[in-house]
Length: 276
Image (cartoon, rainbow, N blue to C red):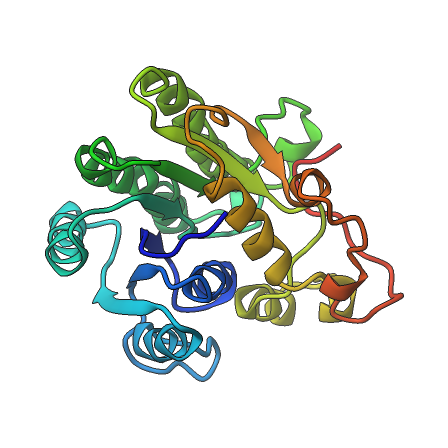
């Protein structure tokens, strides 16, 4: 039930959900490679690979800050090699990095389309491909991707078809790789929140888009961190190919009171995308 001594490679871990998962693992004494682009502070999006590395070390883990753009396969390969050199292997990959642009077809510039597909789909595939040779040598290997259940309800396509396709591309990686590596013992699962999660990216989105989600109507990233911890401590051969929802995972872990995860206890929660 512990991640002590395990090595996690987490994309997009300089803030938000990736940071929360990293800090939860650090409390167990895990080794964490922070693979993200942000090396210098951005006033609109606080958090860097170096600030999170310091937090991980303070929480009891070991950290490796790696400046990585997951659109560049050479940078991924170098970061994976550095992680293996520093910690001796990789036990867990968290595909957390993602790009979002909630616009309709006519309002989506192709550069934004390309960004979402390069980060979400190509980045997930490339990081999985780079880490798998090491995961196949691990005792309890896991890939956990922050992506939704595949849902063909047209309502999830009509307002932002490009973003939906990009997120579902991540989920299709989960669907295919789970079956491809099932017999080899690598668990491949997806995790998604029931409600909106308060992150710096969500706040920035709300600031520029009318009708955005207010922080008080969200849960904190800690709910996903605790759910991820439960998943990653399961035997890999017993839990794979699943599209998991955070509150359902915590119910399996015996946690039914979720009030502590609310940004503002008692305030109504906004459901996240892709769940009917």
